[in-house]
Length: 402
Image (cartoon, rainbow, N blue to C red; front, top):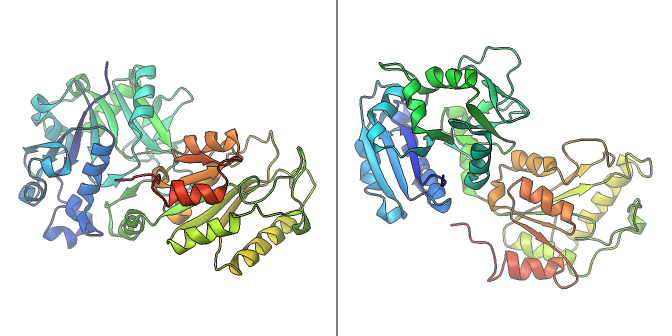
């Protein structure tokens, strides 16, 4: 079975929580940086290889159709199914059933998350599920939990009321669905998630693709400022420290004091170039010497303060430094190759990690970057940081994020 190329977006609700904004426009047409939220979703789908989009509309449908038309100017084909505003998600999907592919991506119109269709599809095939939710791990308490996923990637509890004990994670849409799952819906104006997902849980046919990357929403007034910041897409580069900015200590040793710190030639210039081009610059670094008792948190803070003092003399700076103080075998989430520090930076700075270059020097950096879906580059003798910044980040070879 080949991966789906049709996306179906539920976009018919009244958007009561966003009144008075939604008195004049439907929720997904609220604007950010000169274009409606729904346009960001359409662009994302095109970039991920979807060529057909079905919009399930209800409230003020002409506001959507007038903007998107048949989709050609956005590089996709867009179809529409318009039903009553009062319809629940299940009724809206059922009435469009004849327009659905055998397998499709079902999305909510009010959530944006950096879509990873290849990884999602691999898990979907591996689990043999009829449907697969994308699940925000919600370790930071960003929202309320409504489900639980086991170690095999299967959803073992789904509770739309969010009251069941032991819940961990929340459904954010981006649902891979087999059309046969619609046969589990009762007749009438029903909610698709409430009716179908618990049945699939009992059949062990609902999987969950868990992500630590925060999603952004137009679901409430409170969410809009964060979404505005996220969709501004301020450029950012994340750097490893030892081996990228400065010389590494010998094996099993650490740069423990400032008098042991040696900048690589061109490293400060590279940071200065990034800052002058408007980039946020963040450092993530493993520092197991703390756990091993070879240095203290105070020693590390002194090194980092002096780094920024040196950079200030070159009109440069590092915006934030994240470090893992744990030992090699601690099992923490922050020590690379695990991507915890990258996700911490994502949440604090509202980054889209799929658009954020990570520069390291070691295979564990590449592994961490891949786990976070960061485009990752490694320095070496031929490609020191300054050359990478000039040619691959700022130059002709820079990543293109359409």
